[in-house]
Amino acid sequence: MLTVFNIQRYSIHDGNGVRTNIFFKGCPLRCSWCNNPESLDPAPSIMFDERICHKFGECRRIGNGGIILENDKLVINRDLILDTTVYNNICPSKALIVSGQEKTVLQILQEIEKDIPFYNMSGGGVTLTGGEPLSQGAELIDLIIQLKKRGIHVSAETSLHLPWETIENYVNLIDLFLVDLKHLDNDKFTEYTGGNATLVMENFKKLDETGRKFIVRVPVIPGFNFSSAELFAIIDFAAGLKHVSEINFIPFHALAKEKYLMLGKDYTFGNHRCIEKSELKPFTEYAERKGLISKILN
Image 1 (spheres, rainbow, N blue to C red):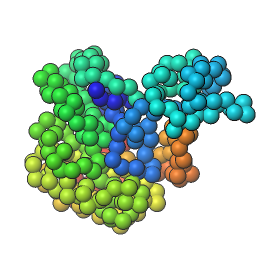
Image 2 (cartoon, helix red, strand yellow; image 1 turned 90 degrees about the vertical axis):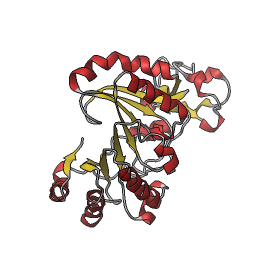
Image 3 (cartoon, rainbow, N blue to C red; image 1 turned 30 degrees about the vertical axis):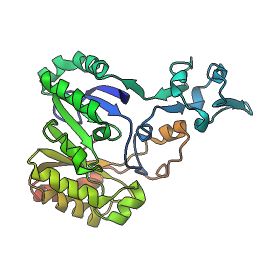
Image 4 (tube, rainbow, N blue to C red; image 1 turned 180 degrees about the vertical axis):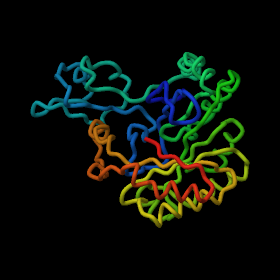
């Protein structure tokens, strides 16, 4: 089974043409600004929106102490909830939802096949994202093989923060890698993501050596990498790889703030200002001078 928290149809920003994005749960990193905090835990997650809660009581009737009413407010004791599936579709107002459902390869294929006419018309396909899709294991490989049998183009968004032996399993299966390059400084990378920048850079070089096509994606984050020195260094690294023809800049926004509240998590980047596209023009121009196609994504 594969744990999926969203299937987004008609996307146009994550590869060529019209695409279906499959969002998988589970990630080896803990980026402080993550736009999909519901993706971090590999297991399904309880999300609760107090603003639309009418206290109907169905969730409390489960009776395991995981959800109680205290001072006329619903309290989610996530540590006591061992089985989130009992809360699936239990809330009439949708104030409480379970993010993440286990799906078979066949179930995912049935969703994807609905959009094959759009792929054929636009040169589109499927984009695997998350979370970290490449951490899913053998069933994801089976899904990709089934997609290839149907002639469907497959892209994958990845942090490359995995053992190379894991990434290598996908090299000849994925048509286009969309790879995050967040920072080159190991100390800063670790502080803000909990990961290892050296591992990522070594995997970039190994992926480049395979000759596979890939696009570099740079999340531009205030206080983390939004400076001329840091972004120019990232561009220089990307330009030094043989098989990168394009670099994408993704300006920070704080739209995920409500998700963190719904998950009962603190969002340390909630008070940072958004970065405007116009502020990234010097970096797109520099990247183009270095021979890269450069885009700013929404």
